[in-house]
Every structure is written in structure tokens, then in C-alpha cells.
Image (tube, rainbow, N blue to C red; front, side, top):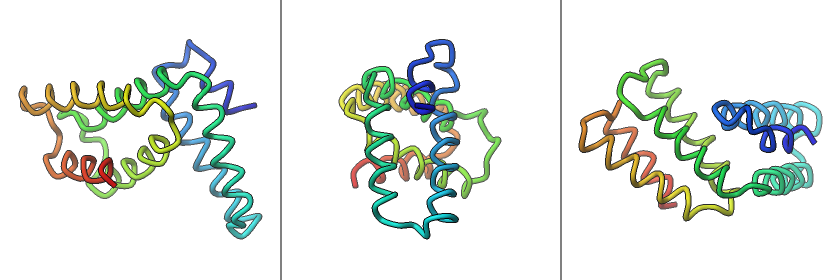
Length: 136
């Protein structure tokens, strides 16, 4: 129910992806601390996330791509390379759960091209890392 409220709330579009990442971190911690990473709980969590993220798959994919763009832009140096890498790993987990991969791809490619052509990328290594994660 909480996950659905994050996705359904149109007033929170700017913070939706970060809220989903924070919520997933909390659930991961609970599963690890209380259920010793029981596989059934992990599967149930993935299915639940997949269900509520895909209530609005186009919106979720677009906002995910925009979030990636904001984190990979120059001027966004609030995180170290290791923190950025860990964040990209978490984003990829959400990406794999969304059905709107084609929408994500469209927005991501456009934003990537803008970052590279306008020399607005925070790190070429981070760009390469994200591309390799998407290929996997």
C-alpha cells in the first residue's frame, strides 16, 4: 500500500524515484535483519515492487530516466564515485522491475546524448558504468 501511494501521488513526481529507493532500502533491511534474507520474502518483495511500479509504467520509466540524468549531470558532485556506483546499482534494480523499458531507453538515450554533446556529464566513467549495467 505504501509503495502504491508513492507511485500514485502526482504531487511527488520529483521525489518518487528517491522515495522508492529509500523504501526498498528499508524493506531490504527488514528482510535481512528479521528474516535472514529468506528467498520467499525476497521474491515477494520483488513481486510487490513490480506490481506497484507498473501501475503507471510509462511514468515510472520516464521519472527513472530523469533521475539518472540528474545524478549523472555535471554539477551534481554531491556523491563520491563509489556512492554514485552504489546508487546506479540500486537504480538498475528498479529499472529491471519496470515494464516501460522502451520509454526509459528513449528518455535515457536523449539525455545521454545531451550530456555528452554539451559536455555536461559528471563522469565519463559513470556513464560507461551505467551503459554496461543496462547491457547486462
